[in-house]
Image 1 (cartoon, rainbow over the protein chains, first blue to last red):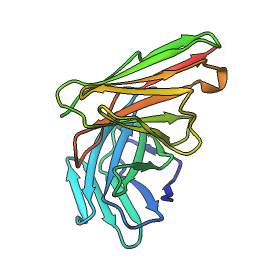
Image 2 (cartoon, chains in turn cyan, green):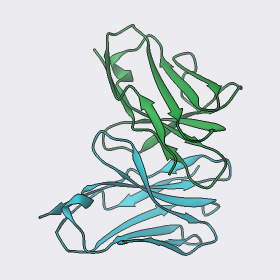
Image 3 (cartoon, rainbow over the protein chains, first blue to last red):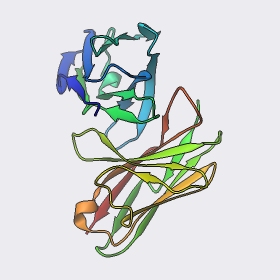
Length: 111
Length: 114
């Protein structure tokens, strides 16, 4: 069974600092890995998707890397802003289309 | 991007009653829909997978008679929580997809059973 762990569980940084969020998974036989953002009481917004054959994906200030063999992914958010405050979830997809989620990292960016 | 609409966003119901949650894909046809449950500060737990026109596949430990899922069309799936009890209070989220690669999620439904 796939286990997904996100470290740290919570993170508080001053505005402008870069953020580094970590995700690890136990079974490297994944189809892809997706990072989501979740605001309190809301659904999920897809941020980045990395196919298993890819090493990284970038979108604006966001960059996500994937090391499938070691079961790790890292989400980097450059020059953080208060609007980046949210919970960030990592999810890995198995070959059966099912997503396994981590518990998330709750980020607070202080103005 | 693809839009998934989930309704209602919040619902409060009395213990023993049933509640229906709708999940619609607005601008694409979803061959598969997923229902998740999320407890505070925990990850999303997959409850069941539904394919249009066929019975849902439930994850281990999920009571199929309590959580009824219907996927009647390529754009609509419903989750009915039957005879709800306070322990069913949770955040329920649906996901819809058509093939790969991305999964798109609804806004979630906060269910409170009193």
